Length: 303
Ligand code: 2NF
Image (tube, rainbow, N blue to C red; front, side):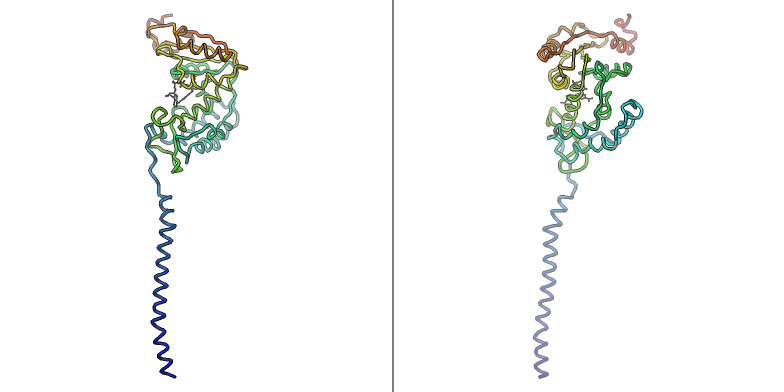
């Protein structure tokens, strides 16, 4: 009996040893399997991927902080009469329009929530468009404070001079490079933004609207510019009575009758087709005065 018990134990022990080893082996195997099947793909997904490289300049450093600072400056100091605007919400809507998205597949809809938060009425007869004349147009509205360029409205003021883009594979902004609208893609988050806000700015305009054009270049009216592509075609004939163009020449530059040039004739023709009256003036006096403030000694500034 005793010998039988002894022999049964000695027969069982190797068996128990094998099963323990097998268990350990199985544990190690399944552990490794979990690592391979779950942890490795998760790790790959979570690993910060380098942003794609584009030909344009990257997002402006401190983009969000600048945006917020400008929003508060505009609503509290520049135009407090605009009333309450939620700058926190506006900032979130702005970044949500382009973060974690392909910067070459931006759409007007991406900016829709931002547009809704920043609606702003510009009084009739006070809209001023510009093309190739940014400095001069803004010098003018700085002194004629009741006139508005797009950059004198909240959203234009916030975004002017900044650059931004995101990436579909990351929730960060791309500070290294962003798509260039000529070399990478036209539907980039930056261009789509300006097209969208320029379209709304033109749609909202009423009465007599104005544009400052650059008479010192060969085509003061450029059909490929935002003014020529977007703004002119989004004016509403039922509420815009006339477009007044001021074609300005640089102080000292030759030629002074750009209003009769072929490029201005194209603008005149487009407006006629759209049933909007057009008038044009070379070197509009009040803006000429501002040019002369910067060049007081020039002979053409001796009034
Ligand atoms: O940066 C701005 N503040 C801005 C940009 C684009 C459009 C303002 N706008 C609005 C303004 F309200 C003006 O009424 O459009 C009008 C001026 O635009 P424009 O294209 O007629 O005038 P330009 O002097 O030719 O261009 C102004 C700036 O916009 C850039 C261009 O390189 C320049 O820096 N720009 C023009 N088209 C595009 C585009 N499709 C563009 N940038 C990106 N994508």
